[in-house]
Amino acid sequence: MTLHLVLLEPEIPQNTGNIARTCVITGAPLHIIGPTGFSLDEKAVKRAGLDYWELLDFRYYNDYQEFLEKNQNAAVYYATTKAEKAHSDVTYEDEVYIMFGKETAGIPKEILQQNKDRCIRIPMLNIEKARSLNLSNSAAIVAYEVLRQWDYPEMR
Image (cartoon, rainbow, N blue to C red):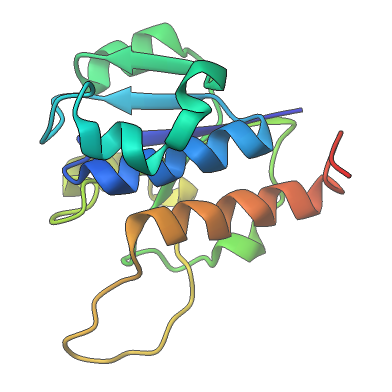
């Protein structure tokens, strides 16, 4: 069983660093699809990821098309506030990729429309100016739901 976390054009280095820590502690490879809004060598990314970077299974793609080409037949779920299905309503495959969009815009509409049946959301109150959770919190919430369904493989 393998959980993969995928960030599409992340913009905030601290979020990426926090998600890298989540990936290491859960055994999930981290896939980043560029361009990013920061340098991956940036101190803020490294600081948020602490000394976990050397333990991280990290994969980088120049664009979404390259990600698709290198991960053919992947079971990808797209996290978005616009989905009808909750993240906990899905029964996840033994190998699953959860994609999160950039902090300011999410995943592009075209990608969501092409994959409508694989879009998921985290339930939250409908508050006009509070649009979504922090990206690193969202990644952790969905990751742990997948792992819960799998009965936390190899975890103590």
